Image (cartoon, rainbow, N blue to C red; front, top):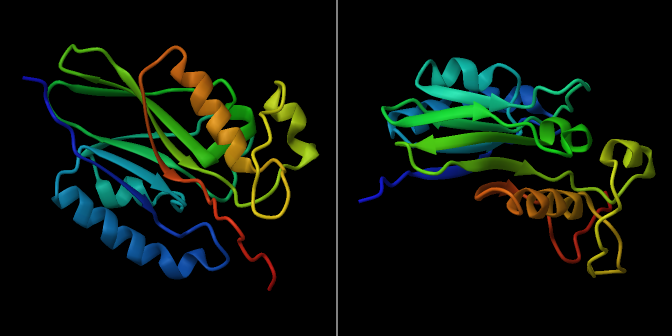
Length: 186
């Protein structure tokens, strides 16, 4: 019988305008998740250093490790260390564009076929041409949205996952920041 893994995704809300106020809540949530012995944690908006301390040595942490500076929002794939489960960081083909918004790990369970686990967090913003060179590929297709068809960061996340799924089994979870009719007025 195949081994079952438990998985949870959580946006720890530490990437917004008041991250310091949320750090202790994030630490508490991570400690509780570790006590529950959840196998895979797909985390978004992690403050730097929090998963390391809150999860201790119980988890292998896979984060963005590219050459470009990370964004304030940081995603993590945390894989519980247990016999027969291995995790290694995986560098996505379009990681230069996504940077720390996406994190990936190759996960192998008891000598079975491996899969790539991806913690996704799309910026809640439309496409910005300043990042075209970081994408380094033809733009993804435009999907219809509430007001007018336009590219959003979520479209780039979906294109990255689709590309990855051509060659790998993929388990992705996270926050696409998608809403039809989202009110961006302040």
